Length: 208
Image (cartoon, rainbow, N blue to C red):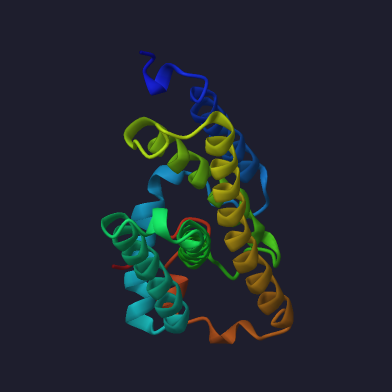
C-alpha cells in the first residue's frame, strides 16, 4: 500500500511549498515590505504594547484582534465538532477571516507615517505566502486529505489560498482608501511615544 505522502497527491504539498517561496519573494519585492520576517512576532508585541500605552489605533487592534480570536475559535470548534465535514462553507469562513486577521495585524504592526501611501499592498503576497506555508503544514501533519482524490485535494488547496488572499486584499484596499483620504492630514498628531518607534523597524525603540 502506497503511503499518502508518496502518492500523486504529494504534488499538492510540493506545489504549496513552491508557492510559499514564490509568495515570499514577491512580498519582499513589493514596496513597503518591512523585511526580516523572523522578527515580525517581536515587532508585533512591541508595537501592540506601545500603541496600548499611547491609545494609538486602539480601535484597529480591537477589530483585528477580535477577528483573530474568532477565526481561532471557529477553527478549533470546527475540528472538535467536525463542522468542516458537515458545513460546506465552514472552511471558507475560517480561511477568509484568517486572511483578514493576519493582514490587519501585519499592517498595524508595521505601519509608519513615513511609508508612502499605497505601500500596504505588501500584505497581500505576504498572506498568500503564509497561507501556502500553512498548506504545507497540513500536508505534512494532517490526515484529512488522505481519502481525497488528487483533483479534490488540489481544488481545496486552491480555494483556500484564493479565499485567504481575498481577505488580505480586502484589508489592503480598505487601508489604501483610508490612507489616501488622509494624505493631507497634518503630521502634528504623531505622539512622542510613536516617534520612539522607527516605522521601518518597529522593534527598535529609543526609550522603553
